[in-house]
Length: 477
Image (cartoon, rainbow, N blue to C red; front, side):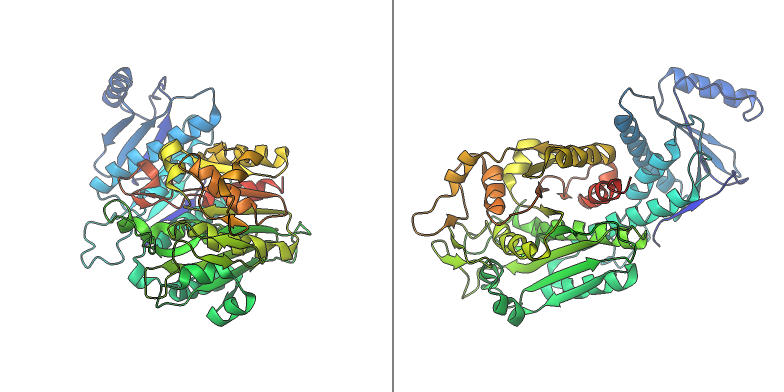
């Protein structure tokens, strides 16, 4: 059962309750017995982060979070406290929890965010679901938070979990065509439209990058055009979100090793999943913005007609690319999509992709690599949104000198740079197909974490959904 967020103006009796306090909390005599007060004081002295009081009819969880000078880091501590709380709730077989805040800092909002995301599980293909978390309802009783905010948060976090579902789905259940069918169904539920271009339509458009990557596959490619255009949209030029949709990546003829590499490559469509999750949240919350999504989808296989290192292909914009490595395929399908985006005269284009191992090696799972030619005020606003949701951005340069890394002797450009600055040369390749304000996000380090990472969970994380939603809605402020 999906987790539900609810709102109430007061605490209910005899329901398990989490109370957010600071380390200097003084337990009120009218709320706690003398023995409980003494125990709370002892635990605070020992710097406990979670204090459990069992009242038999229900349990009280005192969640201790210290204030920080940086409010964004304070909110992140609350999300992490939600992860710790969820482990205790699962162990205690708790089905419903209500949150109360004694810090008067909207802390329940961020605790609920971490708790909700920590409660996510992907057990679709398990026959025995007895170990699943029983928690299904989180009720916020914080008077500093409105019911509207709680309902909005529900849809944002549902969008994150939807993206996680898509990333975690095995490839034998998610070909490009099946992926497109799923997008259509999600759009019908949420309130956005989807046009799916089939193989013949892609051929007619001469999207050479997408067609080349698809050559080795038995399954046809798709090109998905998502559109959310409410009647009260505030923008005249659309914002465009582009997501890499490689539903499975073997590396093609430049075959990947299997352990800790190809065995994770069902996740190579995490950029597309983030776009879908963001569209879901925007549409469900009736955000007054016109947004278009472009998702080229295919797998990358070493089949009999697979494209090969040394090939030259012609892209959608008629530029030619020398292929030096078939495992640098994401930039080829994104190049077609970015060139296609020009027809919409966009206000801003944002692409998301699990593009390079270089990005993950450079900054790990702690942040997203960002490259941009957009105005500085746009870049700073985007970084601010990243800090707010703790999807922090590290900006890499797009200096002209990096274009030399991609010079080809026989084509306009090649799809692989040298041994150095791999994430940058990949971004520089994408820039070649833009003529509008553009932000590139390489989410290779954050999109799929097999070891798990706090409330971001294990395997698919939904990276990028909250970032996109927060930035786009900030434009309405």
